[in-house]
Length: 236
Length: 208
Image 1 (cartoon, chains in turn orange, blue):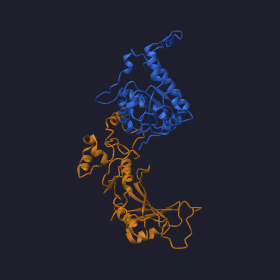
Image 2 (spheres, one colour; image 1 turned 30 degrees about the vertical axis):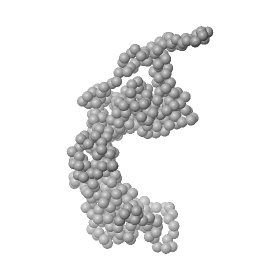
Image 3 (cartoon, chains in turn yellow, brown; image 1 turned 60 degrees about the horizontal axis):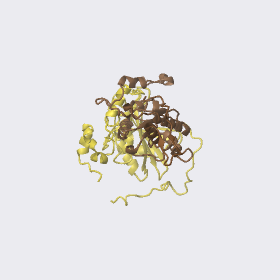
Image 4 (spheres, chains in turn brown, purple; image 1 turned 90 degrees about the horizontal axis):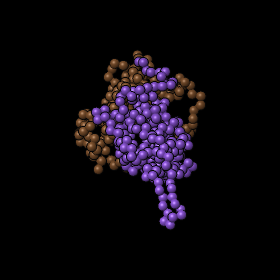
């Protein structure tokens, strides 16, 4: 299929039955409880035990799902014509101050046709490998969001084609800045931070296309060089 | 740094009665006068200070009155690096390279609290003052400084340029960073400069 023919415009609210009143800002939303997104019933029927908990907070439905099934669930939400969650607006993670509490990875999905919003969460208990399936094969927009999440929290998105740091530079050694055990000013002294920053090659952080034509290739970490060598096309 | 007492004879003598007309002056004075009034700034704007810098350059405050008619977006044609905004560690090698690409004579203005000290960003990501990366001539305080503040800093820089002596070799000395660490100043000095101060001392640190 050519790229031009794969584009079909989505008209907001087009999936709703005729006679549905136009969208309006809801008033008096309760903090907890309220109407549950109807997608949840469909999810329960389809995935059963993988749906662990459902909360409605400020009118938005949060579904805690089993971490290994995330990609299947997102795939189904995206592909099923009765759901049509075609817009991934955020992928992020939360760590709580309570060390007992697991990390949460959060996906925000929006169904334009049905005017629905759903929030998926996967719990990553401390001590387990911080790995969740990537949704990059479903949403290309997950690329940088997952890279940022990896950069800040160290969560590995299995299946992401190019999971490297996005905000901090390649070879940043201090860890994952948004984790609660990360000191605000970083782990190293200021002089050491500056020394490491100045040692970085300014050209070593562009896109792969730019990198492949830059001189900085040999300065890259070993694993990244290996990834780049495996059949990367240059940008010409 | 590099400031010498102002020579007394910074005057231009001329003879209007002579047929050809002639002018005598000190070469230093003439050269510095030319340099000070044709500084081309290289804007390194990373944050809100750059908005104030743009306001300074625009019609209301009109930086062109001070000889800065042209922004030099290439460092190779620039005289003054104006660092406007916070500099994260990721930008530190970029700023260093831009500075090294600028030809001598060159000066640097650190505009705003963040560029000068790290400002409110006393965290893992932000350089605590660009003077740990490159030498700075004028610091302009403010968050962000008003255009008048920046213009005052520029006039101070012009004053500094006018006091330079061509015979003084130190002012054209290109600082070479330490080859192993790439730092200009010793690590202990950087740590001391970057120490938290004021309320930042009591800032909550994550103790987990």
